[in-house]
Image (cartoon, rainbow, N blue to C red):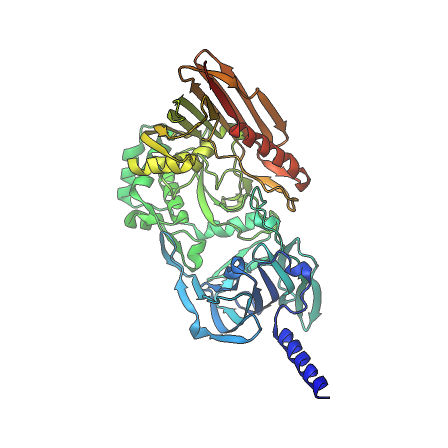
Amino acid sequence: MKKIFFLLTILLAYTNAYANNFLFGIPDTIRKNANSIIHENSININVLSKTKFTKCVKFTITILNKNGEENGDILLYIDENCNLDKFRGTIYDFNGHMRNEIKKPDLSIYTYSGQSMLKTDLRIYMYDVQMTHYPYTVSYEYEISSKVGFNRFPTFFLQSDYEQGVIKSQYKVTAPEDYEMQIKQEKFPSKATITRNDGQVTYTWIAENIPPIKAERDFSPEYKSIFPHIEIAPVSFTYFQTSGSQKSWTDFGEWIYQLCQDKDILPADLKEKVHAMCDNKTPIEQLSTLYEYLGKSTRYVGIESGLLGFQTIPAEDTYKTGFGDCKGLTNYLKAMLKEIGIPSYEILVNTHSKEINKNFYATQFNHVILCVPLEKDTFWIECTNPDIPLGYTHQGLAGHDAVIINGPYSKLIRIPSYADSLNVSTRNIQMNIKENGDASISVQTIYKMTLNEWFGMKFEKLGKDERIKEISQSIHIPLTEITEASVKSNKGKNPSTEIQYHAKIQKYASCSSNRLFIPINRFNNNVVKLPETERLTPIYIEIGYNDCDTITFNIPSGYTIESIPPDFEYKSEFGICKMNIKITEQQIIVVQHFSLYSGSYTKEKYNDLLQLMKECRKLYNSQIVLRKKQ
C-alpha cells in the first residue's frame, strides 16, 4: 500500500510539473521549427467616439531559443495621442514557475530620437527580459486610451516574426453602429464574426493553432504579402482639432493638402535670393540651382510630433533654422520653385514597400518627396539627401505606389521604375600570373544606376585608407594587398561610379611541379547561394541587374594552355549566364555575363532559379590549367 501511495505521489508531482509548463500539450505542428510560441494575443478595441477609444491587450509568449528572444522583450510604442493607463507583467522560467513580476514603474521609457530626430511624440515603454535558460515565458496585460482622435488603428499581425507559432489569437473591435469603418484583412484564416447589441457592433477575429512561417530571406516577398494581418481605419475622422474623410485617395489627399495650406510663404529676402540665383535660366537650370542650394543650406532633422506627423512646418521656419524633416524640406523646395513659376507637388510614399493596399484609404506612408513635372521630363526629388543626383529616382522610390497631393485632384499613382538593363556593373581585370602562383592585377569597375546606389556611391566620400579597406572586404580574396585606388563619380540623371585599383595577390593560383591552376573569377560575389530545400513562399526579385566581367590573363613565359573551360550559355525565365573565351598567343580573355530579371514568380519555379545560380557559380569557380613547356 505504501508503495502504491509513493507511486501516486510521484505521478501527481510529475503531472503538476507539466501542467505548469507552458509547452505541455502543444501540437508538434506548432512547435516544429518554432523559435517562439504565442499562447494568447487578445486585443480588444472599444471605439467610444471619433476622438476616443480604449485598447486592452493580453499577451503571453514562450521563447524557445536565442533566435526568438527578441520577441519576448516588452516594447510598447505610445504616441502623444494616447496614454498608457495600466500595465502588469510576469516572467516564468522553463518549469512554469514565476520568476519576476513587472509593474508599470519597472518599464524603461525612451523618447524615440533616432538618427537626425529633433522632435517626436513617440514614447517607447521597454522591458529587457534577461533570461539565460530556455524556454521561458513572458505574459503581460496593458490598457491604453486615446486623447485627441485618430485616423487609423495599428495593423494587427497574426505573427510578429518568422518561425513563430500561435496557439490562439483574438482581435476584437467594438464601435457604435453608425461609426463607419473600412476593414481589410489579408491571408487571415477566418472571417470576422459580427454581433450587434444596444447600438454597438462588434467585429471579432479568432485564429487558433497557426504553424510557424519559415524564413526564406532570399528573394522573399514583402512581409505584408506573407503574414496574415488586419487593417482598420475610420471612413471619417477627427485628429488634433482637424477633420477629414478617407472614402477615397482624393479625400485623404485633400485632408493633407488642407493641413499644408499657406505653409509655402517665403520671406522677402529669400525671394530676392531665389530670383538672383534663377532669373535668366532655363527651367531645368533653375531646378538644378535650387536643388543644389537646398542641399547646401539645409539638413534633415525628423519632426514627428502629433499633427506634425502629417503637417509640414512653414517654409520660412525651414529657411530660418536650416533644417526640416522630409515634409519640411519638400515644402521648402516647392515654395522656392513656386516663386519662379514652376509648379510641383508633394508625393506620399512608403520607402519600405512598393505596393500598398490600394483599396484601404488611410495612411500607409512613411516619406514625402517632390514631383516636378517640367515640359520634357518629370523629376521625382528626394529632398532629404543631397547625395542623390537630381533626376535619379532611388530604390526606395522607383516603382512604388504613392499619392500625389493636389487638393481635389489628389490620386494614387505609381512612381516610374528603371528597366533591369540599366542596372549594370562592368569589371575589367588585367592579371599577370607568376610561376609561384602570385598575381598582380589592375581592375576597373563601373557601377550604374541601382548597382551604383548599392555599391558605388559610398566610395566617393571615403578616404584613401577606408577606400582600400572597402575594396578588400568586397572581393573576399585572402592575401590581397591593394596598392592604389581611385574613384570617379558621375552625378547625372543616370549616375555611375568608376573604381580603379591595383593589387598584389599571394597564391592566387595553385602550383604543382609543372602546372598552374588558375581560378577564372574570384572577384564577383553577387550570385546568391540558395538553399536546396523546398520553397514555401513565392519568389520576388525586386531589382534586376546585369554583371559583365572581362578578365585578361597574361600567360607567364614558358607556359602553355593545358585545359580551359568551353564557351557556355544557360538561359532561364529568371535570367542568363554565359561565358566566352578568346585565346591569343600570350593572353586568355574571359568574358562572363550574368543577368537577373526582376519580377514575381510562383514558388513552383524555385528549382529553375536555383539552377541558374548554380550554373553561374560554376562558371565563376571554373579554372584554367597552364602547363610548363618541356
